[in-house]
Figure 1 (tube, rainbow, N blue to C red):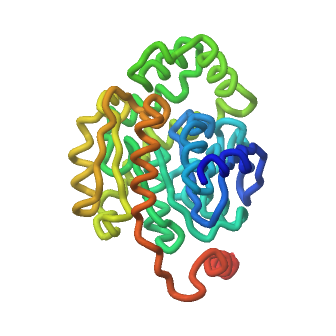
Figure 2 (cartoon, one colour):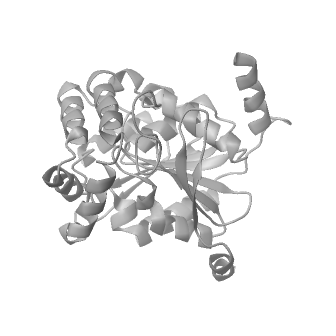
Figure 3 (cartoon, helix red, strand yellow):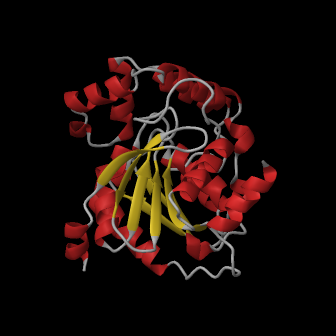
Length: 302
């Protein structure tokens, strides 16, 4: 079955418009079980390529998207850049892609957005996987300032430092990867967009911390994952983050991995992801609850 899916559902890449910002979607797989992968600050959908292929091979319909201001999405001012706004943007994207519900895997900033989305639209989120997530516990003033400075440093040396901090295996940080990241993060409007994210991180990100709201989620629908050598969102935060999540939810440490274990140790992460997603209980919703209900609610609010 897996081989058949891999042959008949190749990965496709396409631009896609939402109400507030157009993006790029990477999509592969088939079926009614959807998985959406959300990247971190200053990254993009490509980081999930090895995970998309594995999820599709396991019979899942998988997507990765560029957040506004990132990758090949719209850049410049007046785009969604706060966690609540990004969660609403993902929900709008799901509506337009006709995805009633999905598992949501998020790393770093994407983990914060995934958690916010699960709280805002529990009937739309089958489960959440938080990979070295931000936003569960406060970053604190020093951490906020360091993150803000790093995101706006789009010089080649600055890009190289960020990539070297992203992974434990420094041989992965090639000149070609640095060049690619440098060109994308210096493309038209990227500087303005990243500066808005930096301002939000420096001043307001801790106001949107979600840890206190997460404990009532079903523990069978939540997994925490962390690279054991993560220095960007330090592994030392993991116990405090895990304590904020529902009792008995899974916590997996990925050995010999930094902040991007899904990229650095993709084979190991994919095994854990697929095992977790396969065990998530069926979603039992009242009749009529889903995408159509959310779309009607948005129309009423408008």
